[in-house]
Length: 116
Image (cartoon, rainbow, N blue to C red):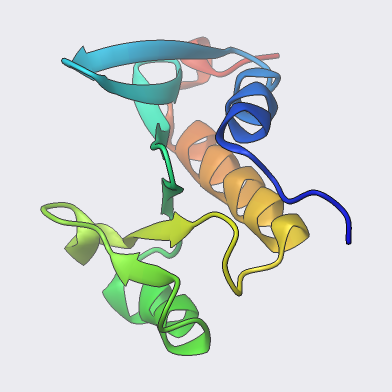
């Protein structure tokens, strides 16, 4: 069985994106940002990502993986979910969710802050 995606793999994947940089806005909490906006909350066992334009869209992923995806506290209503690593969500799908979260956040940045 191939190794599963690790927290470190996920961090490296996020930070390899154009213009991405790590930040620690709260003590002990690492996030990946592009411009001045967060696109991934990097946790020990999961990642917080923008999974839809609204709660209804993000809930589709929760419905598909009820044991491994949950609405994020505080910002979940805006379409953010926490996705557990090593669970039912395939690693390639997690990476696609990172890509989508990144692309969504970049698209909302002012043009001058978008990576080239």
